[in-house]
Image (cartoon, rainbow, N blue to C red; front, side, top):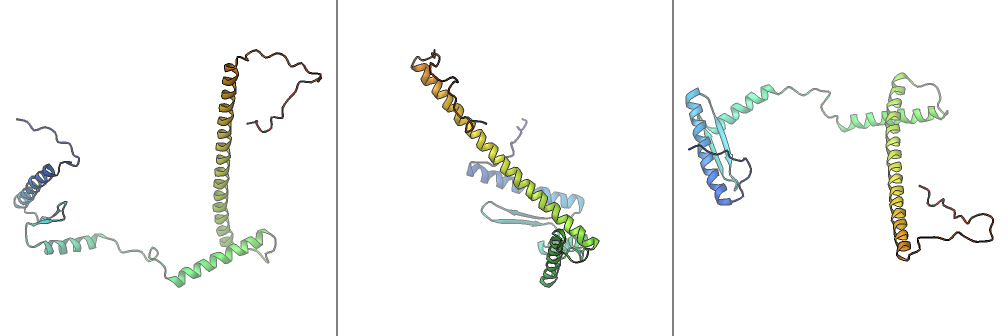
Amino acid sequence: MARGKVQLKRIENPVHRQVTFCKRRAGLLKKAKELSVLCDADIGLFIFSAHGKLYELATKGTMQGLIERYMESNRGAQPEPDIETQPLDAKEEIKQLKQEVEILQKGLRYMFGGGVGTMTLDELDVLEKHLEIWICNIRSTKMNIMYEEIQLLRNKEGILKAANNYLQDKIEENGMTDFAPNTTNFAYPLTIQNEIFQL
């Protein structure tokens, strides 16, 4: 009899879940032992149940010995961290921030004509990078404001359309579909300022 395909998802029934855990845990431990015997491999296996119970297997030696062996082999595989990537101590960071602030202040004085002398190429490069960042932030803020204004105008448009539909329905209910021409003494027809309603 062929086995059906098992869906890999959490088993909701706790009894079925526990039975499946026990069976599969036993099968996994058995396969690990077989792999160790057949291929002469050192295998260490940890299993924590849903209730936090620990099951472990060390095929040769002890689990502590396997962990130490793993740490030694893993330590050799990791490259030594570069000096450049190591975090700077507080004094170095403060010194760099002060230099950056001085360059920015000098750049602002230079841009507004109050600077004495000229700026170096490195200082101009730093100033250019900061200006580009500021321009991006300004454009982003501007786009957000424009988007909010567009949304407000769309909301107003929706309100005006709803009001228009409501008024047309009221007119149709009252049976006033035919409007008589406006008979007034004015030479020009009466118009309403529609600046508010322009979209």
